[in-house]
Length: 426
Image: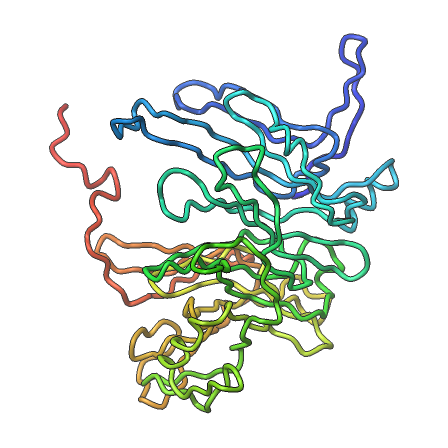
């Protein structure tokens, strides 16, 4: 049911033990033997286990550059608190409405020593009546030393709200890891963020807002967003500061023609007006990021993004779900969005035809959203076939499976499957 279990007192050998939601760690190294239980990780404050934990790696080679005998080899598990309530009525409230009666808490568990880090046992976020969304850990410079963990919050008092948070992991001392806010869209964020860096040393974080857990969520008519935001810098150094959500450029209504021209000019700032996709991309390099408004009319349930985005090349792919206006219907409609990661717009179809049908001309408007039919779909999956062609695979909530060709052929990155192993000694 995606909410875990409530605390239950059980008498074991005349000793009362409280059973509650937990994360279980299993050793599955040998597939020929049953998994070995290593730890059951829980305590009173996490509440229901609604968010997926992530692993944080701290791995450094020895002086000779050898990772087989690393100078540091520490691994941690990070997760946030879920919905929770005190007493039987509070537990029922948390289950029925996915609410929290406590400040959101953040936990980091040392997998080697099998204990919580002192500063995250737990760390109180100070965000009241809230719980955490799914987390993503990022190693920005790919040195086996993770730099940050990103996740959203769901604030449950009154109208749902939330923000995008990060744990700064750059300090070698775990006691100096800090929790901060990247931006505050004031909308719930339950999806796992996705991160991309490029040759310009831009660190992008992408995520959507919205929640689809309870019946009331399917009737929610609030405006939700999908946005891309850059880690802010100060004098060329990443500051891990907070970016105002209002500073993100709204590129929702920009239409890009197949040849790269914009259907109409767009004002990025009062001093900057652009008329083409390339000039827009160039202008946005000096901005904090962009945002897209999801489906919204103020009356019917709006669109929401509740699963993690995927990226391929310059494309950012995510699903958007709109619950049905008629609540007697079982399923709403799911959409696939394909955006350029730096602009939040469609890519000109002449450069990459993803969602635009064949037969387009130079002035054809490039599609950035198509319907996938009924059902709440999970995150898109990027699939590379044996012929090198790449496609997007999505399984809808109604059981339907769709495949969209990206029309890109990848170079051979080496062996991808055991089927490619030849001349195996018998």
